[in-house]
Image (tube, rainbow, N blue to C red; front, side, top):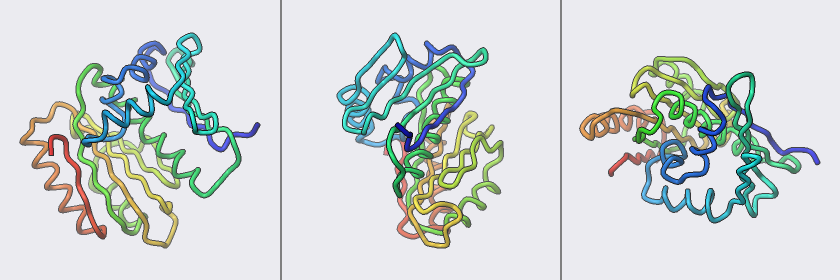
Length: 220
């Protein structure tokens, strides 16, 4: 059977450490998604209630998703985490694929640089010109582009902890159409006051570039 998509991200820790971060809800909360009132519920639904766990193979298979699974393996002295979605292509597959890429890079930043430490996020949503917003983000955020794809841009930055900025575009960065955009800023070591100031600063920047801007901040 062909695969709708397959995503791999290499992480410089032992496989068992990634497996723990993939299967314990308190650990998943430190890298998956973003801070929201529904996050714990979503984690339980996706990773606990709807997942079949195979510790021997280090594989999670998700019910109701056409055989989608995540697995962890040793690779070249470190590890690789992989999500595989069997099936044929469709219009949503590229955006779903690169959403996992963003999440796995959030896991990479957490587990390599901040193991056992809680994350706090600023999550921004809106509609706008994907190319304009992505270009503006690369100017605003110092650091290294960990991933630059059609629907996702991930920047590892020394700011925020060090932290991570993950931009996703539903339409794709090459599309001339206005479409849905999200930006997740993952931070570590910031105080409540610093998070509040960061949220206000980024919401002002985001509002100048997007329509119907929204912000969700840790503790809000």
